[in-house]
Image (cartoon, rainbow, N blue to C red; front, top):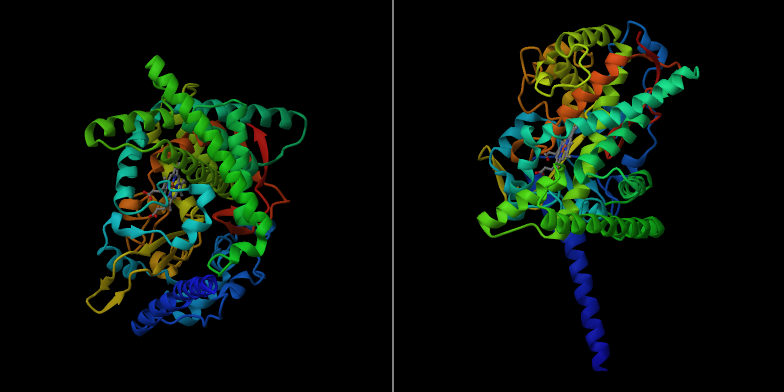
Length: 520
Ligand code: HEM
């Protein structure tokens, strides 16, 4: 009898707890947001607005033939293609509204002035990351820098950031050059066998994976390859399968994939643990630090230990290494791949960049990293490429303390925030009528590309949580592009289909097949 009472009691408690987190708490947040005047598409329980989000996208962009012609003005207009639901909801609810992922309400923001007013009230360590994503992406990022919060975030950032200083990054230039040259050798062999069509996205993602494995863990051996392959497999499982994030018991709708993701996460942790422990042992013995990110991280961690009496544990270092891989390789690879696509369509810019490279770098086979900063036009092109095709298409936050906006209303603690970077980068009210044209010169005299609001251009996020690896990606971008443009010319292949889509990052659904020729 007593056991039955205990069982019923436990059951009642569990039901109470679940109703609180799935219903009462989100409902209260929603009510508070509604009283502030925010509208949004009506949700249904328990899916929220997921059904509309999952509706098949019928919006296809222009074909390659149109892209090759002079009428390129509308072809980069991708918002309604990659986020059709946000585009529809914007039409009926404006640029700030509420939508639901399962039982989790999100405040959607594509209005930079609202974002500025809201974020000016919050210091970086007071921002959270949506719990629903932290749980879902745990096998991928663990408690690495992207996901940690509060004082713990401050501590991680303090240890990690110095590893990305330009002086430390210089040592990595040769690793980047070596991997790129190997890729170029493969291309030359392929071109010589009369096959000039190369899917540059596939190739560059693989090379960037190798670069990040070498620059992060200093490994070019079988172990590095194994880690990269497992990490990529994990990404496929998490972002290519139909999933119900935010829906109660959603992860069990596809039990097989959930278990596979957990298993892969554990295997990657084990491999990285082995690498880190070995490195720590060899550092103790040899006193020679390697100049890769792990070496720098271990060194910084030791220094912080002396200064603050606090270090990152080996477990935390594993999560940081995983974070570097995921946050670092695909984003940079996509920035390069989308650039090659844009240069293939806008050949005049290909010529301009090649001229600039000749002027700045000359025939020097050893790239001088100091000279890279003189590649001004290349920087405009990169800025424009990540404006039109931002590899990180959104930025997310969770409010950890009530935020007063304009002394007018309050965004309550617990609110999930979804910032639509693609939406803002393609908004004519911010950029003017030429918003969807490729015009790198808009960045000539203005780091914000002439955007009429400084928070309308956010390829690397904003505030204290802005991307820690951006200097690394600028360097990699310039090295890879310099090598490629010095050796090859690029044209769009007739097989190219313009269909950007979201798979965590903004990717070309059908790759980027280009016709590649060697330059004489
Ligand atoms: C073109 C390349 C890249 C793009 C577009 C990009 C974009 C972003 C964005 C949008 C954020 C979120 C910022 C925010 O929440 O405000 C971010 C954060 C981050 N990125 Fe990058 N990233 C790139 C390259 C890299 C590289 C190469 C690394 C490291 C190897 C890296 C590591 C990180 C980390 C660790 C964070 C979390 C920072 C924090 O929360 O303190 N990223 N990145």
